[in-house]
Amino acid sequence: MFNRLTSWSNNLMERYLPDPYLFVLILTIVVYLMGLIITPTAPGDLLMMWGDNFWNLLTFAMQMVLILVTGHVLASSRVFTYVLSGLAKLSSSPAGAVVNVTIVSLIASWINWGFGLVIGALFAKELARQIKGVDYRLLIASAYSGFIVWHGGLAGSVPLTIATEGHFTEDLIGIIPASETIFAPFNLIIVAAMFIVLPIVNRMMFNKDEAVAVDPEKLKEENDVEEKPKSEMTPAERLENSWLISVLFGLLIGPAFVIGYFYFNGGQLNLNIVNFIFLFLGILFHFRPKYFLNAVRNAVKGAGGIIIQFPFYAGIMGMMIDSGLAAAIAEWFVSFSNEVTYPLFTFLSAGLINFFVPSGGGQWAVQAPVMLQAGAALGVDPAKTAMAVAWGDAWTNLIQPFWALPALAIAGLKAKDIMGFCLINLFITGVIIALGLVIF
Image (cartoon, rainbow, N blue to C red):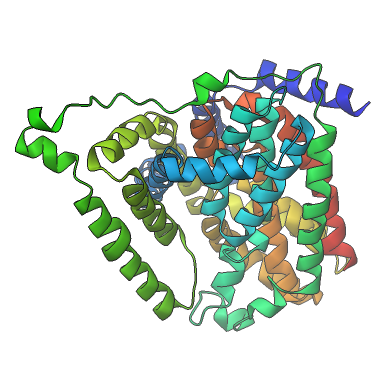
């Protein structure tokens, strides 16, 4: 029965889910029409909100391009390939590979979401090279499914924001330490449930009769570096093939900054430092600048989706926030909540809004004023309200192509290849998270 359900979900997504680029264009039209219907915003004003915010995610888009490129470059190095290959050998069967990649992705995503997105996809790719009979689509979907725990983890933007002095809702709720959010019993129980349930569900979705394998040769990194004898090299070519500069930056200058950063920032990971670490490890592990640059050229080929789609999401976010549409959706969920159901409906509202505002920090800026005031009126702990928003934001990422783009680019797959599996995960994890927020 479970295999039939998975087949139905995969067929549904393969038939009806468009390319993520078309998805964001359709989403733009939907949000524009919703803004006209639900809010009093004039058509021209809504259009200007879209255009004025169109470039607001340029910094973030560049960060995402770099996490794709630096992760890909690192993975193509001989050293990292050896490490991933060793981990992959711990899996003796296709089903075991699915379980192992889910666990690795969950651990990495709980530590840092950017780290989890890349490491999970890279590990899945290596497993596909080594394990015969594995479903490549399911491997990548399993790697991406681990991303769901990021907002309940060490790099969750909502809990870290409200734990920081001077945050924008401090006058309303004060400073809430991580012990009441990330390390609160109810949150740890939900995270633990994800670590137990997701590997089992992903394992159950494996069907050897419908597995779509991939030729391991197609997953190998291209190596088109032209080799020349040293005697035929120009001085510039000798410099490009010298290991001295790579060692200087990869072994001395880069690590020196990383050590200083962690010393002065208490070991906190963020997207910039993850990119920094990936970049300088890539420089070191490729050893010669010429090999490193060749790996960069190969990696950049997969960044097109991120570059072209993120501005459209920035425009959507602008319409949602500036028109008051996001606040109106949140208020609608609040209108029929009580002190018991409030965390549930906060979670569901956050999941819906995340389709249009796929940014944890941006979504919290939209929902916090509405949800915190309503929660206070109902006597709901603000930490619980904040984490309900955080989990809602993370939950629907399972079927929001925005966050899947780096993993898909690394894997060389399309969104419809993995979203059937992710849809199953969406329903199962949604029930677990909802119960965790309401019961505990």
